[in-house]
Length: 111
Length: 114
Image (cartoon, rainbow over the protein chains, first blue to last red):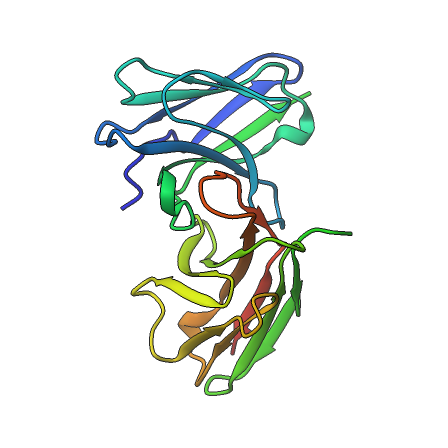
């Protein structure tokens, strides 16, 4: 049970922002929200994670709803190299090894 | 390259044979994880180690599967009496420790059981 819901696929144009949604309506108060992405033939790559506040790093931004039942991963300017499967994951902060991946969102980026 | 290293990258075996995969984590990462990924699915958690101690095992890890991390550095995942359903990508990841939120994955070992 992945406990998160994401669209199966999304498309974006190169150099435009991308907003990848995720629903996690049963999230508990101590669960973090993690995002990973997986390029073809590679292992998953960490993107960002957060608990309550919005988070920014060099790769992306994470916007977390006030009720924490949903979040959005924001890629500010999509590039062709951002084409990947993006996984939104609920994870307990103290045992983040047991990350339960769903099927993720396959992002296609058009030139 | 100082990332997570896995060996072999590809393994083809016949049903009933035993196979072993090795994972070398990033130096000084004390947590090491194993995941399995089948085509079109996200990775599934199998087990993880804190140093040499195996702290958690998924029920997916049947008695034909065994993982070790004897000196708290590299780890091995052995599958005995392989079945066709074991065909998958076996991913290893490491992290510096608790509450870091970031796992570093290797490129995986792809197993094909004929």
